Length: 166
Image (cartoon, rainbow, N blue to C red; front, side):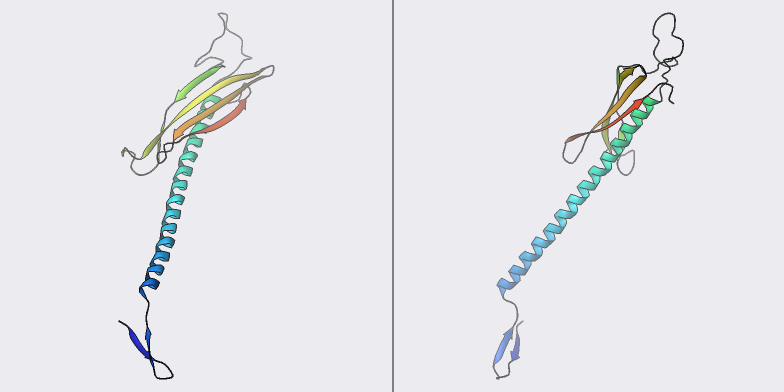
């Protein structure tokens, strides 16, 4: 519908938008809306990656703490039959050693759901740094894959441990 207005000199003036003006305004609206939706999707993806990385970092810290909690008492009397390692001995986690643990991280919803977890693998290594004074390095690398991109990432925690620390 076109409105007819009268100007001061008595001539009729048409008021309204042309088709070109409407198309240009729709184009501008589409570009702005598309940019907003794309920005929202990118922010959502970054937040999901950040939460997964934080879960992997916490699991790497858990792995290194479990290794640190193992008994290491090199000043205990050595056994007569040679070095003794393993659970219940003065050295429960001998150096060098490596072990692997594969957890699943719950990222959302019901734990029984198959799409609510992602997998990571902890690689823990213990290395003898010094013999006198005794000092070991415990390193845990948590390898995980971001499901949206398929890229692999690694979170690492390293600590040094002296004997008789529990």
